[in-house]
Image (tube, rainbow, N blue to C red; front, side, top):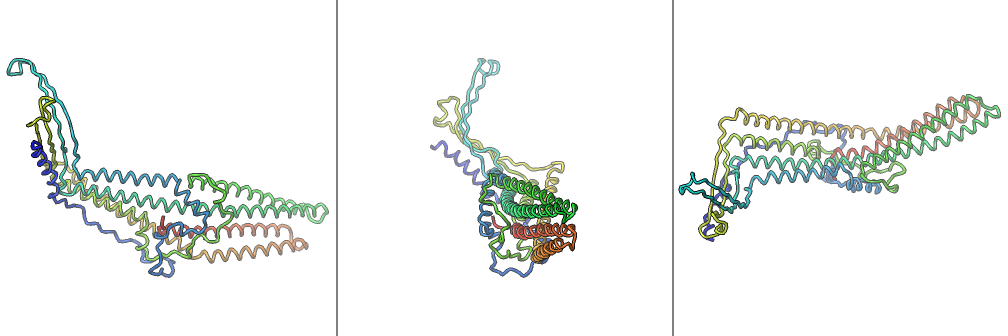
Length: 471
């Protein structure tokens, strides 16, 4: 064992050198950019109480009220391919980080080799041809860089930030998927109501047309009334067919989002009266709310990675020191490879000082700094975009109650108008055209009421999304 003591001391010395190498990073101190948005959301209302839960801390199962919707979302999270790709990207980024991190340590390996050489007689001292052989068995490392100036650590930090950005990207995809599934499910519910309305309207108009046909047969009404009545029937028939198609398209969209087949028991017959289990989500101060959104965090991690790359570019201006070391045995005969006195070792430190690079290093630093500036602009743009998304939802939310009330009252007024028109038509006071116009207006107002009810439901979902709701 004594023959290996010196070789082992050489390896320990080489490894220990890194511990005194003082690996200080040359990356600039990171400062989060100031959020370039107003201090308050417009139309945000009263501030939330201090103990109010943040949207990001509310799991989606606790937010969405309908158990059928929760089941559909769960299926999408389990089977959606876009989310699966985003999850696999996390594993890819994690592996890339581990690859970069491995550069901090020497790659130690064992080798065994044989070399043989034949020399002709005129090249040997004896005048006779000779064959020489050498056998080697070694353990060591090659070209391990001592990170004196933090270049490798800066690259390692950049890889870590990219990994964290990928995690936030997956969270963002998940929240977007939850919102998209909920919106598609609610749209399906609204279209079920529209189809039901079209079916009722068609049945009513068929009955009315049959009555008018009988009245025409006995000479009470004119043929014009019959034709106008028939136009209402065919219009209702076309609406019914159209909403059947729309409903089929809704099912196809949900099937794609779920990544699996739909079950009838998951689907709603009409719009749910309460999408959320919570009355309202706390909005708070923009700078506090927005910086916690996954897409904003993703942009910030990308900015941090660009900041770390500046440190690596700066460190490239300084000398780099690499070590190659090995210890083992060598012998001219295979059976003497591990015999006494066959120990061998090598230690080859190398220092490289950049003298002339034709501007390559400065250009690399310029690229890193510009990329950092791009990251700042992208981060600020992400916050501005998020601010607008929240402000848009709040602006719509502020008028939804009034719009709903107006649409309900409009439907009630148009219902009375149709009833009065029927009375006046049957008494001969108005033409059938007046009744036809009243029925068309009622049908349009009922469709608009369904549309506003859908907007209200989707608004709850969108607010949860833009506030960075929990996954």
